[in-house]
Amino acid sequence: MNKLKNILMLSCQKAAQLIEKKLETSLSRTEKMQLSMHTKMCQACSNYQSQQGLIDQALKEDCNSSSNEAECEDLKTSILQQLKSEGEK
Amino acid sequence: METETDIITELVQTHTSELVAYAASRVKDRQEADDLVQNTFIAAFKGLDNYKGESSYRTWLFSILRNKITDHYRKFYRGKDQEISSDAYFDKNGSWLPDKAPSSLGEDEHLLDNPEFNATLLSCREHLPEKQFAVLQMKYYDQLEAETICKELEISSTYYWQLIHRAKLQLRDCLQKNWLNE
Image 1 (cartoon, helix red, strand yellow):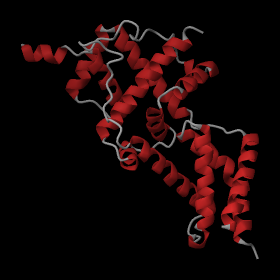
Image 2: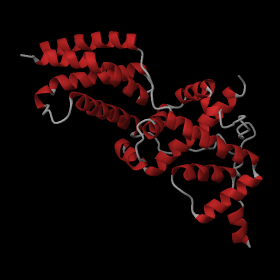
Image 3: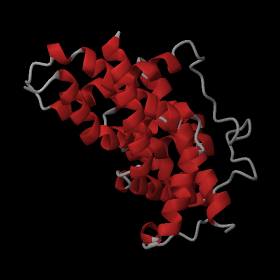
Image 4: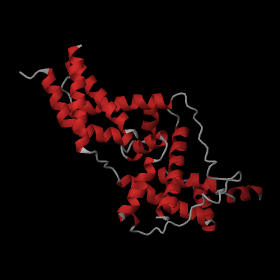
């Protein structure tokens, strides 16, 4: 009975870790059951699960960070000067 | 005939902006990103004799830059204590602390199409500690496998997962505070 209780009583902290694991790899059957029972009873973790799915998706989609062209011109000039002094060494 | 200086000048003109964009995706500090790109060109200039032409100049420059970034991070992770707790989010029984418990973000299927939501998420990402930012970017931006990231940064896989988990706890918390209260 104690064993069953241990399986059923998942803390939120542990549930959050399982949610992470679920997004990354996959869960064992026991873990799946533990997590699904927990999120049915716990609104906070249920929110956490759907929001982490969303964040995961948003981060995957955002793959282009742009850089400012004007700033790059200054950097190019500075690099070329630096290279010139390297070349003279 | 093209001199080495001509070649490198041409490379600087052509590739600086994409190299900087890449460096800035990995390193939070913009000055640091610029320095890494500058050091990449200096290394390229010195190593031009050894360039075998087996890959394009662009590929070659990116591989030098990646090595520079990895060196930068290895220094950064080395020697720092490799323990991260999520105590800031949970009490001693592992329950959410009252002000950290996830409430609804009003999420629906269109939330990801909302530019303001995405802007808030990116701004939250900027606020992550550098170590968490780096692994998150390697995972999502470079789409590297966990194993590869651990190898490159010379960190344990346990530590890696702690960093990712902690980063995502913080991102979500930041969204809750900044998205709903706008």
